[in-house]
Amino acid sequence: MQLARAAVSTLHCREGLKKRLTNRVIWVKLESMFESKRGVIGLDIGSRYLKLAQLNAGRDGYELTLFSMMPLEKDVISDSLVINKSKLVSSLKALISQAGLKKADVSIGLSGHSSVVTKVIKVPQITEEELSLNIKYEAEQYIPFDIKDVNIDFEIIGPDRDEDGMMDVMLVAAKKTVMDDYVDAVQQAGLTPVVVDIDCFALGNVYELNYGVSDHGTVALVNIGACKTNVCIIRNGQTVFTRDTAVGSNAHTDAIERSLAVTKEAAEQIKLGDRPEGVTTEAVVEIMDKTSDEIYAEIYRTFEYYRSFSGEEDINSIVLSGGAVLIDGFAKLMEERLGISVEVADVLRKLEAPGKTGESVRNIAPLAAVAVGLAMRSAGDRQ
Image (cartoon, rainbow, N blue to C red; front, side, top):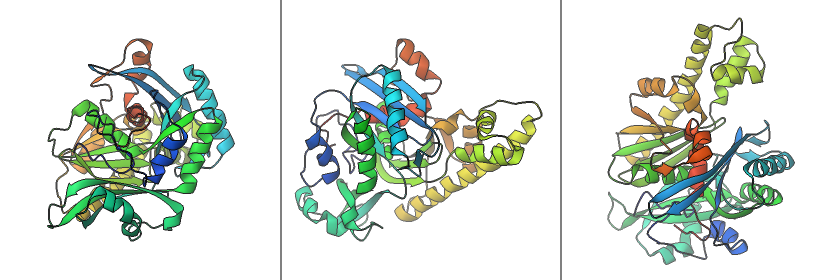
């Protein structure tokens, strides 16, 4: 098993190991409604930007044939929830037009600590079919929502390393109302949703594509967006832990806005390197470093939670993606604060990106990680 092919038909399977189990209500629901054999567009709906990517799969690997990105008005998405569906639909239509698309099958991702739960659980060793009949009963003790209000999926990881007769299972639950809001908005925009995935698992796709699945020890994939951070921990080629936190690089913008008494728009530009008259680099660096430390502290707490859960001590390296990568010095300071090697995700490392598409995405490639990971999926995938 490569990289935790977990719950939610997580990772693209290049060996053709595709399954369809009727109990997997989250993903079967979509696939049975929207069957298609065409390639999909990976659609990353964030709180700050909308991003879409399209790949062609050839004999020698993948080629990025389309990437488009558009700012999203504030208060459309908050805490990974759709707050203003009509504005989201309008923005999606604008993105589609910008990308030169008329219609498309899309793969979308879900995340958010208040609406999605992913957890490795231990259950007695039984067959996948047997577990499919009992997963709701197993899940009830781990999910902080009413079991009737969530869609559930799972994937067997393998035998438990510490206890005979037990096995590890990746369990995923997503609130039905949250998933339905995203699906409805995407449909209203004229797109056809054929796959629903989890953002953390899309990051796993990109990591597998670019870095392979050989033993790199324990690697933390950290994706820091505007309002959230996704953490996916991979140990010896398997996803063993995921967590979303409600902290992101908007914290920098808010801190600059408060401290320097500027507009939010000006604060965003200052965060990215602009220095208007009367604003010194020293003042900005002090604000930015203090805020970055708060983000690093949240990531450290996530790592500590993983260590307490798994009994493992070492995280050998961090692969960083998301908008925070564009903040000057953020990755280097993160490495110093956490004492762990940090590498900016090379999303195009094993991905051909010719012509204008490559030019447009190369400098912002770490922002494209989730969209590219979602674009690796295919309608009908179970793995």
